[in-house]
Length: 392
Image (cartoon, rainbow, N blue to C red; front, side, top):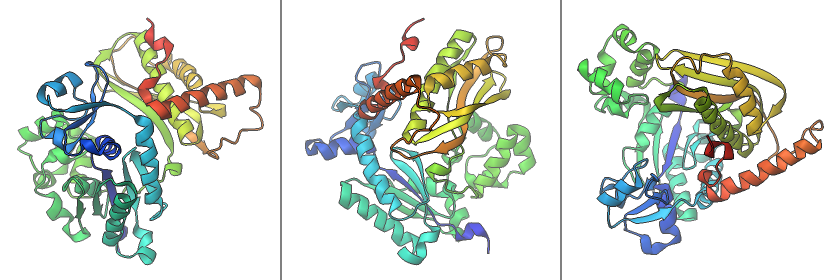
């Protein structure tokens, strides 16, 4: 029997998570358009309640615009420490049903419950039980999609929000996908959608009927991937957090970077974010990789492997800068930059140290990173700005 037929994957996505937590802590907000985001007019919306979304408010929208279109809105600052506290409680519930949990964000995850059926019953009943447990233990609702693949489960969870459960069995995958607009597919942005529209392709079914060589000629490897996804073909496994092969961060710039100093500033910010995530997940890495995509979409990577694994942002940054010298950054316009660490080692969350890293400088660096992580966890990623990024 095909291995994919046996898979039972649940995608769980908390409903308007940040605003929902705010309503949980302050029931007087229930039924009101709650908007969580930047504290200044130049900030952006992090999340909006469903009541606020009816006014057209959405994430990444400028706060100033959100206030204009939703004057009755209750605008609140981000309380990241509180959201992470609730997130930890929710993920503890996930792990009671399967060890195969792949976190996607603070409020979203894939669960592979294929191996849980013998003990816990049918996947549909497992999904219902998870939803019920989350509501009973936290007072929050979650939308779920159950399907034979991650791709279909992800789409299914978004069909019936909030507090929905959409089940797609293996024999119904094509029936489920066929009428959906191609905009539901990962990787189909405005530019890709425009080209597909020119080819008179608007739905999954229409995309699946196009000869793959035509898509390959227009989109390269991405065309092959889109063709497979349009038919629901996705054999990716749910990857538990500690089975992650690399940890990284990258940015696609609105305007191409032409200046080496600007590139270094971007790398400094990325290295800091990568290092924070490494420490949060209890990981160190030995191989640092720099990813560069030029304005003509030519992409290159440069890597180096160090003797002692690290989770320190400034060390990652210095190595990335040395790799930068092996590229044409500063000579060619750059569309994207990214840093990642691989050859990961995961250690005790209590931070068991290497016997070879007990010198004073290492201990000082560790104490500083611990203090920074504490501020991140309590006040969110915008609570700390690297001094270098605030200067020329």
